[in-house]
Length: 278
Image (tube, one colour):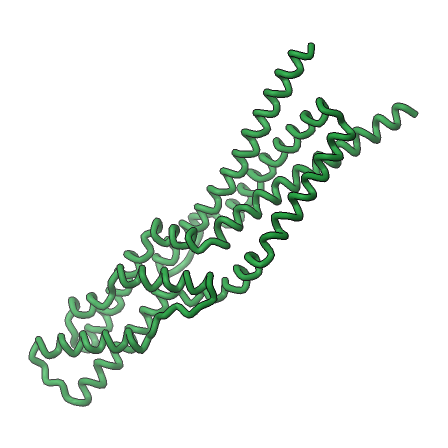
């Protein structure tokens, strides 16, 4: 009878330690989501670190130059329409709009008007006669450039992320609270069942398991979506997505490392207490 009770106690302690491990992993991953997907500053940092604006400006400049070649507009005049600082400013405004739900403030009509004025100024400097047909042609060219610029500077695909971001931000409190309460309850029951020495041993095992499981999930993610196979175009978008994904992966590694360090500290304390008790 006593042996059966001991077996039951050990089995229950194992289940509670495993539950504590899973709750720690869940808390870590939710924290990563909170610090990455739910953070406008994180997105802005990745945009800056990836060099997205500079790469996008160069891509736009080449595209605009090809448009200008067909319309008889010089390369310098067309390339001047693609400004990296302007692209970065408009992108940051689009990111703020994504997270606040406001309008980005970017106006394709206003951009078209500025581009049209620049092209007209170029034509006048070159001594071209600007009749109605030429004016309409330059405006059509400015509209074409504005369409490409908007796709690069405001990233329309960001709008697809808005529902997910809104849902995560609204549910974040419960997403953190639920596993935290479950972890505390499992830890309390584990302490009652195992006693102090057994509790610290099981807690060390749970944290070790959390570190291993978090690292394993990260490795699985890297295998499913290897960085080198992100076949995204244009290159500027690939740079941004790769930088974003790499930063998230690094955050998960940090989470696994924190659990590993905590487990090592608890193990050292457990062994030290055991020696003193002996």
